[in-house]
Each structure stands twice: as C-alpha cells, then as structure tokens.
Figure 1 (cartoon, rainbow, N blue to C red):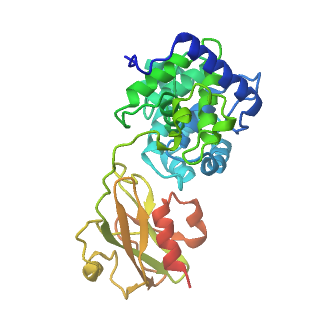
Figure 2 (cartoon, rainbow, N blue to C red; figure 1 turned 30 degrees about the vertical axis):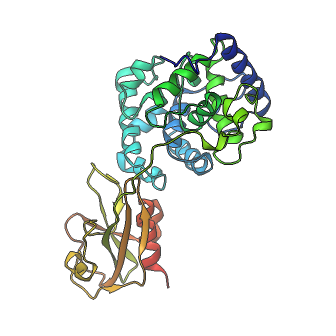
Figure 3 (cartoon, rainbow, N blue to C red; figure 1 turned 45 degrees about the vertical axis):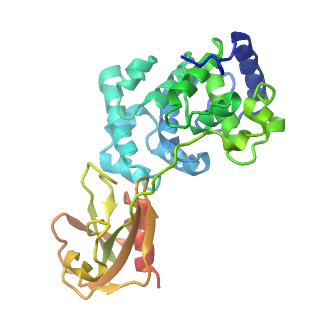
Length: 359
C-alpha cells in the first residue's frame, strides 16, 4: 500500500492528471510509432516500439524502427521470417535476447491469438519478452485500458513528484502504485504517453525544466529544491574486467571469416568473427592458441573496448591473410566484405572489424 505520508488524495491525482494531459495535448512528440490524435493505435507498432525502446533512446531507435517496419510490416510477416533475418534487422540495437523474444512473441501471437495482440495485461504477460512495463504500455496505449507503464522516465517523474526516499529498484512497487493512482479512466493511453514525454523532455535527469512542468505545483522535490537527487538509487557494483582475443581472417578475394554464436546466452544467435573465451584472467600472450586457422597472425595496436551491462571487455585483435581456396573451419563461413553490413553483427564485433580493416 502507498505510505500515508506520500499518498496523494483522489482530488490531487485527478488535478495532476488533467494538468498533464492538457500539457500533452499541446506538446506531444510526433513519433513514427505513435498514432496521431483521432487515429486508432496499431498494437503491433506499439509493441514493436516498446520492445525496441527498452534500454535504448528514441533517437537511436527511430531509424531501426522504420527499417524494421518496412521489412516486417505486420506481426504475421515477422512471425513468418527466419530468425536470422530478424537478427540481421536488429543488429546494432543491442540486448539481443530482445530480438529472439520478439520473434518468438510474434509467432505466438499468430499461433494462439490469430495475429491479434490480446488487450488483457495477464494475457500479454504470458507472451515471450513482455514484462510488466511492456504489458502496461500495450494495454494502455493500444487498447486504452487503465494500466500503467513504468519506465525510467516515469520513475523519475513519480519519485520527484512525491519525493520518494526509498531507492530503486526497491521502490518500484511503490512507484507503480503511485503512478496507477493517477491514471484517468477516460484517457489512459494518452496519460501513459504523457508521462513518458514529460520525463523525456521536461523532467530530465539533469537540469529539469521545472518552470515549464505542468506538475510543478504539486511536486515535492521541486518545492524542496532536490529534484536532481531523485530517483534515489542503490550503489552499483562495477563488473570485473574481462579480456579476450578476436581473430579477423581475410581471404585474398575479400572474404572475411564469420561464425554464429550459440542461440542462448550473451549475444545469442548473432554473427561474430572467431573469438577466444572472455575471462578476467585471459592471457593475451597465449592468444594464438585460440586462432581458428593456422596462419601468420599479426596483432593490431591497441585494444577494442566495449561495456556490456554486467562487465567491461577488452579484446586484442589479430589479423591474417589466407588463400582463396582456404576452407572455413567447422561452424565458420566466408562472407564478402561488401556483405558485412547485412550480417547480424553486434556493436562489439563491428568495432573489431573496424580496427582490423583500418589502414
């Protein structure tokens, strides 16, 4: 239950929702996945955009979304596509388990729901890759159900509005309850998007524009001058650095050796150049033991550095040249350099190839 110390009255919640919606009607963002006023939202587009936007910015998602939608315009088209094509279209967005779940979800929507997304949050939660946030977003935005979608923007707005002292992630249930108490019965979809827009454009992490905020009057953090200190967060522990080696084999006819990572685990199902294990105690001076082919391997100066969610990584990059008739090792394939852009290469592998192929 909401603490009595911060529980808003029904009148306060109604007034805040009305003020926010009035602001949204004037300042709503125009986004490629957002229905224009008076249009009926497309559940497929809502779902696709929400999955893409997880842990990614609107600016980064926009071109991927437009290309993805052009390639897979309906949930049926996505369900029928081979997983490799889906991973290729997703390459560069990161968090690749989302792409695998996206494909699995499309297939389930077609197989179990006739190609129509369910409107009920519980039914949505039963689909692959859909958690509480995404289920709430689809229910509210696509079907105008009274539901709440709490992402980082919404957490920031709500914790500042009520000066929630409990740190995240422990405060998530309270934040969700406070947000749900504000949802109006008549425009829950617009309200969900209004909260997102407010957090993205006004109630920003640094230097929030409180004088322009429609919720400035009831906001406790603004009144106390502490807005930038919210939300409170538990201290993060940095992951331990891992090291490894990457091997870029180049055939004299311009082909590069690639392979596909196992379907499960980090970067599952993505393409990569052959790499060693990634360990904190990896010995770079012994890296050639992990080379995919015998050859004259030369190490490129410097390291490729990449940060995953749970650990940073440093890769030494080795290159070698091979004859046209060199056979690919088991699990490998030779790919023309001009076709690399169409491969499902994660960002870390693009960094490796950039270093290997630089003059």
